[in-house]
Image (cartoon, rainbow, N blue to C red):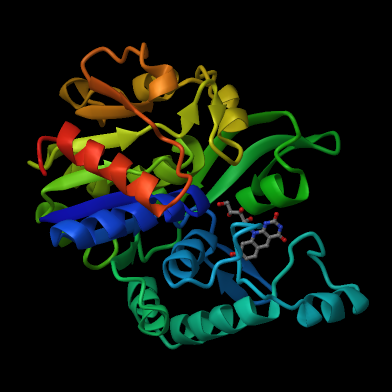
Length: 318
Ligand code: FO1
């Protein structure tokens, strides 16, 4: 069986631990199609937070407290940059992590596409799944917000890391998405999938930018594979991260039902065939989508693998 997962970074990476565990148990292959909207160039280096969160988590090297970056990290370069007064001082690159960005940027500058660079980085980390960026083209999430008395579009990282999303926010724009093509391997993975899972990642700034690549969305929604989403909201609050702020900006109810309705039923031009919610949200109704309630807390790999088994069952594949 072939499982494709649309995913963002930290929450998606934890979900993928369970997908990988269940896939190993049933002999399935997994391809993750990862958000690149968070990607940013800082100090001349190309940083791909979601790809790196997935790669480090599945490679056993992620910092479990922060959720992003490397465990056992040191911060000499960050501190030295600060002593030079170099901006942006609000974004910290760890020393170990910086090596990843150096390799990536060198390969990109030499002309390799991000998908090939990601495969090369994964040679070291052996994530046990195929990791693909949603696109090899430039696609960045920018946020229209009121900052220091002025309405402007800032990079997602500035909105989130510098301002903690705590500024009047108007909309999210996926710069470059319209002309972006799916990365090498994405269309083949989707065409060969037995099921497409939508990870419990932020629907607004992790999953939406993946689906903003027109041919990618078309391939997923017009393909034969069932599409099952897993709610990132449990009991009216995000499992982690800033999904509540993002949903509020779009005036979407912060609930499992609200996100399910935002994705919408595939039969009516939306995304979903099935929607997995937490047992505490068992009453959630998403018209046109088959909903099922199971425990969704990703407390450990086994619990997450059970969620994945339920998602496959909901999609009619086992
Ligand atoms: N998050 C922070 O809160 N502060 C940082 O300084 C920071 C640096 C950073 C560097 C590399 C990287 O891959 C991720 C980094 N993150 C940092 C996390 C990142 O901003 C977000 O959590 C994700 O983009 C959202 O998924």
